[in-house]
Length: 354
Image (cartoon, rainbow, N blue to C red; front, side, top):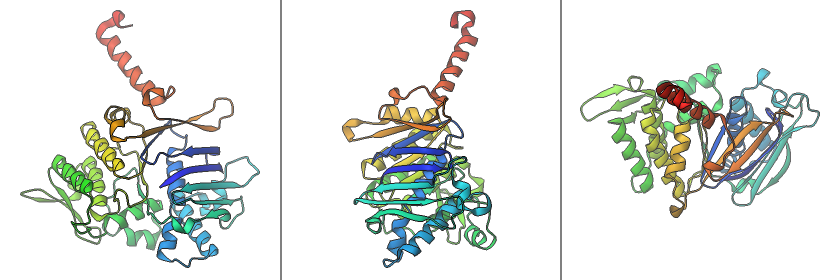
């Protein structure tokens, strides 16, 4: 798991440090405060260990080249140069630093004209080999077929997280005896609420099969397709509680019916109880509130809420981290919900509701 992340002069961040819970982390904030950027930075730094896993004798130059490529592919900066990701108006280098389990850490930096990342610090990085999963905002089941080959051949304007997730979704199923019992439970729950299961035929071809019929994945609601992605990642072992790296999920609520959100939160809580670290970014009050209502400290639940906000004086992005939803300072999600509630009461009750 990733335990700490510090970003200095990187994209929207002048200096931001975040301590991650080993269980569930929920990142909130208004648009342009850098929620997705934070997820992507953490995900990129998590990619170093798997590089050593595939090639144990990877030297420092090879590692930095691979990390540079990953960073550029995940962020897609203008002109595909590192310098475009350096915070505007600063003279110091940009730096990304992370600490992981197994006393592992890495720090890399770059300046405006850098062609590649420079190593600032590394300790036991090769020992952290848990592979992370990043689920992007858009579902991918509707365009998986042929996507990976087209991505490599034509440089499609999707960031690397989309190819990464397509490759994971196309993996073979793990053997039933290896499948974690909570993974099997979650898959069954998802199939029950969707009324069938997504079937992966290889090469990116996906269908949806019910008891009596089979359909194209494109015929299914996008919310079901997103839940189907989660079921598939569990089915292949790409997400295996207690064994795999962090699950990063950008706006899991996107196009998901509010009725599905309770099940989603129940699944994420159950996975975290069995050793799965989860880091997600959201704009959705319903999702936040279900975490608040369903978490159970007696079961060891821990949900850490991280609020990103811009300091009105310096315009710098700051962070507030709390482990009690009620302790979050005023935020746009809760404020908007309260505003809607007040407006509804006012319309129904007229002057009595004011």
